[in-house]
Length: 193
Image 1 (spheres, one colour):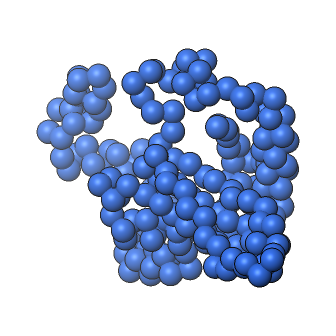
Image 2 (cartoon, rainbow, N blue to C red):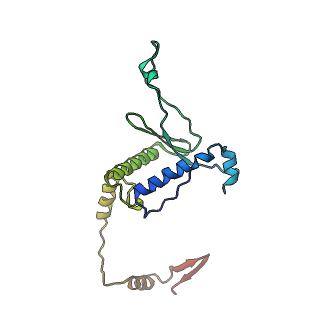
Image 3 (tube, rainbow, N blue to C red):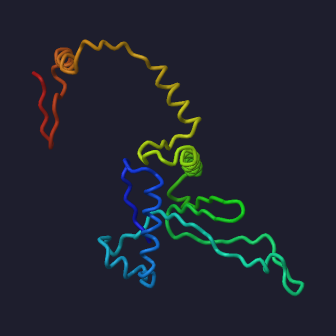
């Protein structure tokens, strides 16, 4: 298991290299079972260690399996791995990469997971287009979602007077609705009147 911190200011490629280096460095601890790792962590015993999982499948397949040895050949090899977490993204590296998103249908709707896959695809396309970009500058939105958001924003144009500051606007609000709460903090409410 790996926990990754994301600094939105960090460029993508150095961040990915850092993750890869940490993965390589952790190999000395691969012998530790998950219950022991949980005891070392700050995660309470009854709480699952993971709610999501990203898996890179890169099983080496012996070519003799596919080509056949002694007259026996195997084709259409498929690897199955049952996830025990609510969401698992699995990337299988073969001649053509495959991406699968497994999820618990009791917790997530199919449409939500399809949208999540679309977001993942949008990120991958941006990674390819601009690998030097800072992580925080990538967008999860697909092209369709971005266009929809822009269309919605354009449809709600409101007049804006730049000469009126936020203070002017708050004063107008207070005059128009003096009985409404002006400030709420820790259960205390203060109104203008």
